Image 1 (cartoon, rainbow, N blue to C red):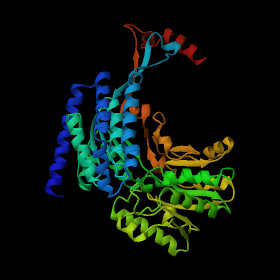
Image 2 (image 1 turned 60 degrees about the vertical axis):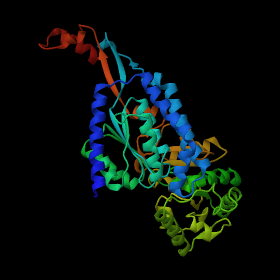
Image 3 (image 1 turned 90 degrees about the vertical axis):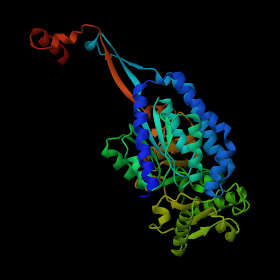
Image 4 (image 1 turned 45 degrees about the vertical axis):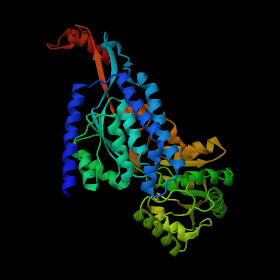
Length: 473
């Protein structure tokens, strides 16, 4: 560990102590102050659109500005403003009924902020996935420390600058640094730790948090399927799936990871997917609206997965493109793969890139069995004209979220919880669910000076016997 990393680790420990002291002095941040905090988030987004897009573009070497505006900036603005709009209602204590035998008295649930939140963000949406959890934490009245990804340093530094311009460090602080700093960050005694990233690292984060009994939210990934049923037009399904798969060049946790198509129509589906990709991007190598792969290591991983499949006899389809230029600009062209061996890495690992295997199924039950026999995916997509058929797929599978005849956009609906299950995640957020993540549901039973329960106190006599007899009838 370098001296700089050691100093950064000591600094974040100090900041955590400062934030905990500040929270202790102001445990119940007012509605007005919370809304002001959320307004700051929306403002820093609106005032810095070009700077945010340029930082992300610098980190990716080519990130489509349209995708950064839609997937990062507008998403955070909408989230902040939705939270501010509904915050008064979410903060209200929730009354619950009191059983007759426990009256008189009133019972309710307070939603108290948990304290100081730690937020670890990934590289694929480096701005959104740092600030959207922060919106939830600020809405709940918490203080927060952010650890953005070291793989997107320009964006991380910009986030640090922007947050520093709008928030004091005892309320929101940004910690930058490499793996050693990130590991130490997850070992801090936060009141809640929120992690977005890979399943593999998520396991390590959960273990680190467990040492301090820190509750965690894990937003992970997995292999999200898209099932096309025989009733659904292939061309329409291909347009939806291709858009979802190629947004950010597939570097999206809820991007479809493979397609299940009716047996005998795999070639038709594959051709339709390639045709849509060709229509969207004349040449991905030179089109700046087609994003690059974030790093040389990730590019090589995707390239090797494709070549492994090709060497094993799979059919690899790609639209026309300048291969040399694409490689030079670290772009993987839209790639559809057929006839894959079952043990291919493309079928065993989360792809996280613009590569899409197409598999055939004989019956819908066979398709749902294929999905349910594997780790629960973060998202599942089904394309059907029959509602009963959609319900049948949902009833036979389990996933974090679902899109019926639509791709990706379920995560953009503020009041839908977003999260995985099992290997794809633990816990959810967005909207009121995000507010609840950073809140403690505190049970309160409030009575007057005297309560009939005192009649049940020792020494036990006839009153106790009469009351309990009635309860046991």
